[in-house]
Length: 292
Image (cartoon, rainbow, N blue to C red; front, side):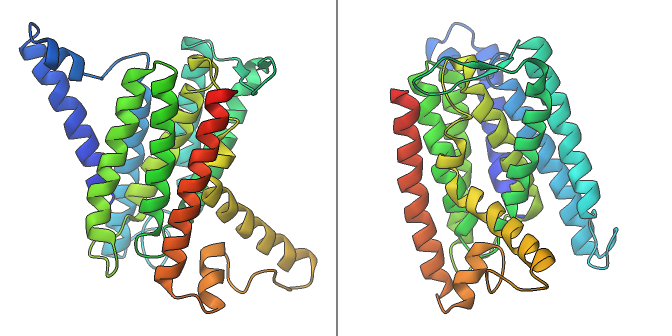
């Protein structure tokens, strides 16, 4: 349940700054430090905490050995329903409250898709949630998510979405605190309470930095989050290969990071190389977002 460190520290930080700003409204410093705003941070904070709490309940039942399968916890189907329900609520908010009806594409005009933004957001959220299986080696998921949210903090700041940039940077800080205890040999594990909150919130931040911020946050998501993209694709490829090629595998083990372990890479090498690639592609995605 180490993911509590991430969303718990983020929630406490943002609420404390909000309370201090309300208690001392004449302090310019405290008012500027308050980055809880309806137009930029309410929704990502909601998804971070809602996803984190849902994952926490799942982790609790798994540890206690109760639930829909022998190990405890929610079944995959129920978790997908929960993530889908949260994504549906957020997508409706985007469509009806924030009038999000288009996607930003670099170097060309935005593409208006109207109400299709609702199912598209749900699909993106579910795909990102599926990538949460990257939390399989000590230190791996924390480093990957840290690079991704740092890139979106830069994008939001460039687009003058200061509160969203502060929120994303705060998440990075929470991940760094978690990583202190997750570096091998890990004492904390991110588990469902961390991955569910982070993946759903990542979808929100990507859409917030898209046409709402006059940017291209969704377009660059597969680039910035390439390790997550490859994780999902490796699972899909493995499943399809086994189904349509009479049980034959493409990877020794899926998802991809476990394949590298199976071919002889020690866990620390997998983690370090994922970190390097995460930083590289986060920078590439950031550059595309800024010049597009």
